[in-house]
Image 1 (cartoon, helix red, strand yellow):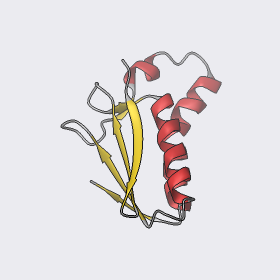
Image 2 (spheres, rainbow, N blue to C red; image 1 turned 120 degrees about the horizontal axis):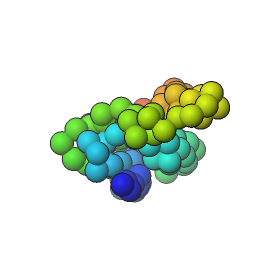
Image 3 (cartoon, rainbow, N blue to C red; image 1 turned 30 degrees about the vertical axis):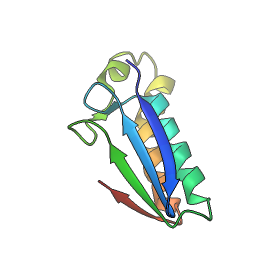
Image 4 (tube, helix red, strand yellow; image 1 turned 60 degrees about the horizontal axis):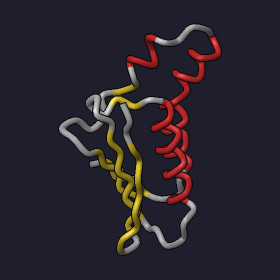
Length: 101
């Protein structure tokens, strides 16, 4: 199942929107895209604040269980469990306020 991460800037507000059909479970690909958008908007001088929002009825249900079940070695496990840590670290380092809604 595919999902997406997209961003837009309106009136100095950078909005990052994400969605995945499985209750916004986040596969590694989407976590990397989310990380990239936080870094890009954080470095944009035209952005004063970042709004992080999801589409669907759940903000985020966590990591992808399909990917968890498919882990077959330590390297894959490390990559999987580092996904959210990478997003959180990008948010922590971001020079802009981030509001989740």
